[in-house]
Figure 1 (tube, rainbow, N blue to C red):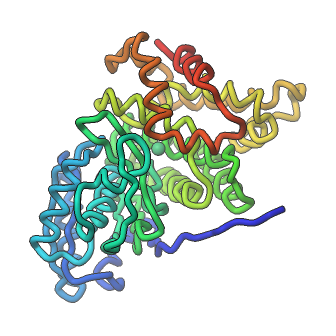
Figure 2 (figure 1 turned 180 degrees about the vertical axis):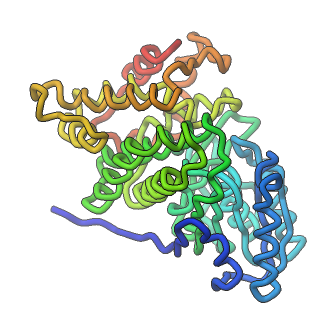
Length: 394
Ligand SMILES: [Zn+2]
């Protein structure tokens, strides 16, 4: 029987030059807290100044800036920014940058209107799982990268810096009310980050396609997104200034966010969160890439039909293969795509992960993000998870 709940309430301004529409579009408030990265790119390329100027033109909308967000965003900064938001009387929050500032903006929007600590509301790990009763400030997402899909989903991933817990969270109120996806802002993303982020988008779609809650609608978005990443990511990595390639990868990413909204990530993301919770210098996309060949080899046997469809979306000619080999064509296509994007040599050991750390990661993945394991096509045991980490270890 087919039944599902489809809810994506975000207005998305997509396409080259769409940031310029910010001066006229209806905004959800009069004074914004702009949450952005502690890195230099949004300032160096003038994005922050442009956003502030466009807001001003839009009925004199005021802005306060919080610019400390780390690549793996932390709870402490959520609390600090929420304090500023309250003190300054901001009535909406803008996340400007990649997934980290946008996710932080979502969490700030919660904590600006609710008492206590952010972890009081988190489900999983040492989170208290309290209900959000105070409401959430409206959220605007302006994405300068193509990776997390956060502009089209309600999810925010924050790390508790003292507890090594990196946990995704969200509710229907943490969808952005407005998102700007302007590929012109992505032209300057360096090749390595373009690759990491592009693979993150790919895995949001592949996981969402394998998930046991996938629907016919999430399937459409997922397969299209997989196809676009397979086709355009190598060019976006190689030739960052190719606007067409950037646009198609951005579209794949926004579609992958929609997949996360109406389907879900599965255990691959729990496994990666455990890695970057203990080793925060490890980029999320890089962590996913490191475990992906072993991870999808596991599913080739257990979810052959869906794996075959994913291989076809990546352009593999599965009809030429004997039936039992078809699901593995996705793993081969993934291997080729990693090579084409120059990320086939990533090693856990380069980020300080030792082989003896792996059992600890298995435990952390299950403890903090156990919910995603329940969405796997078939249940995965701790031994299976350890084997995937071991097979991936270099
Ligand atoms: Zn991700």
